Image 1: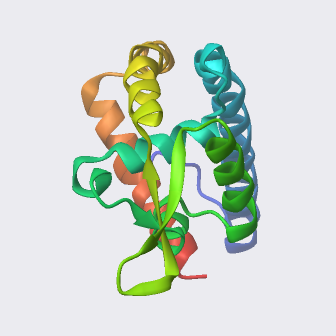
Image 2: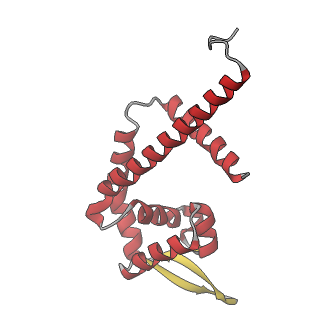
Image 3: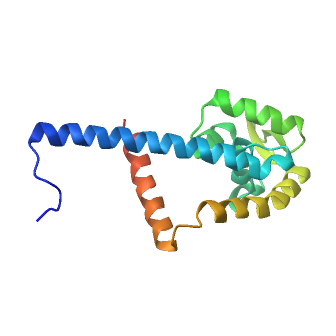
Length: 161
């Protein structure tokens, strides 16, 4: 037996629309706060959350040696070419990444961390960890895993649109 009050079908549909609206607004607010507070966590490195995401993506063990193509990086970060290009331009100007032509296909470029980029990433990690710990302080490990699973499900649903 459900604890929810009995509602007519039109009321349930209106209520689910209201819940969806509130949920997506909460996600929008959380995203904005994440960018604002996350940027504060790495601002002393001259970085933003978007730049942090690129550096983190490129620092992963499986891609650190050869980097990623711009297309692979776009897909991994789920961003447009236009927004990624602007981020890459700033990171390249700062000397944190390089775009190198791929052997065998001169048209394809791979984005890799420079030595300075790797050092900056290592230096940023304690600030990032502190940000994560503060943001998730009120969550148990189980709640964090649950939220991650739910967000994965939401992302999968959005990807189907």
